[in-house]
Image (cartoon, rainbow over the protein chains, first blue to last red):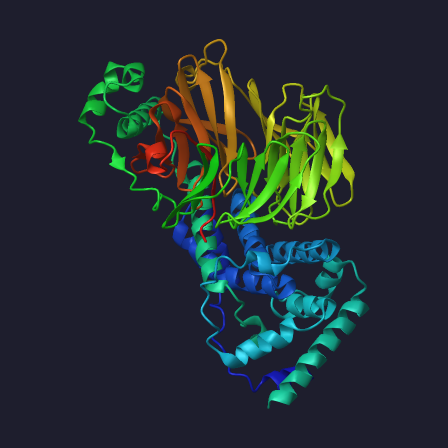
Length: 194
Length: 403
């Protein structure tokens, strides 16, 4: 993939802790019995991608937190009914994707209150520790909504183009072309910083 | 595309901590039903009774009606229990966050190392979603105040305003005023009518209103005959159901269910279509000992009806003869499980704590706030609340989010 080369120069960050399908089934079983450690392992494995994907789609901390949080609470509420033969991650990621897309669409429809009124409580979030990543994050966040959404769904939530097409109600060809344009833009950014 | 997948997003660490606390609490809420082996019923009831007794003892002054009502069998436990733990002061509430009150009619805030009174008087007040603003109503006026008491905007309604509610995303404020249900943007612009009814002058058409959490601006309100759920963006009624007893509506935090609390019963409806999922009558009946303990006297009525933050349980008060019971009802797909948390003379539920571990109850006649633990441990009390605010009368309005 051409854009992969453009991004190769970035300093890699540690990947998510891998959870094999077998291990995940065991964790789901244990969580169904009320095992908090198992739930924590599932949380560690899946929450970061949920929050990051939500943030890069909606670009709003509070909304992203709500989306990721609601997805996990929905998962916990449905634990007893969950079919353990099915993997948890795709189900969870689809919830996140749906909610993030809904939030983005709703925001585009409505008028927002100016940010100036909401500055009375300063953020305690430390500055990003990896400048390279921050730049890439800025580049991704700067993509137009339609391109950014498909890039995030594809490469953060790891949904297939077919799944993305279903979620967005778009033809698969449109998804692929938006994905291509988004990745091309990131590739251009990658060349410019090298 | 590993780099994209591993990009950190702003606010991630704090959000992660909060999300895990909520997730763990949600698991705690459901764990006993799923994990605990079934014990003989007689023993579990005895354990429950002892737990109630311990809890009551932890927060009740000696000689109060609670011990009398629970009976001699548990009185020794009450007497043996250590005195109640003090909850500290107004600046460090169990469970964190900020409590909004009306102190002698003026909005005031406690918690988060702060206790402050906002300027001006109000008949009622409500938090904005993240506790950054207060919607204050006084007569015909609705105003948005910041935490320094500065008025960000205000408007004058055609009739006295009975209640107002900020949408969960902060972009709308709905308010009931005489014959009309109205809506204004979160910045005070775009004031418009949502719906109106015919009422006599001075009468109120609407009994309650609640926003549905989620991406759309869906509002539930109750008029004299029905509960209505409307999409205010599309200006379309989604559904309505008969509700002649004028219940108070509140949506579950995930938006999936609507709680309707009236004096006679509590109903849980599916938000999507209004289908009834559960009903809990004020006068529980049945032969089981647990139900016997919850049996009501004639004239018993319900109140409160607030969801916990995880949406796994709701709290009620039941005025049952001379005493008020605080009931916490855990919900599942199949049934409701009622647990009595506390009993005393005159109690009013305020809210669950931001971390979902405490239930704040206003014990009006003693001027005390009770913080009832939901996951074990001892209850805490904050006495002399009015004095701490430098006021004669303090009415809690809501408990909101950590900063």
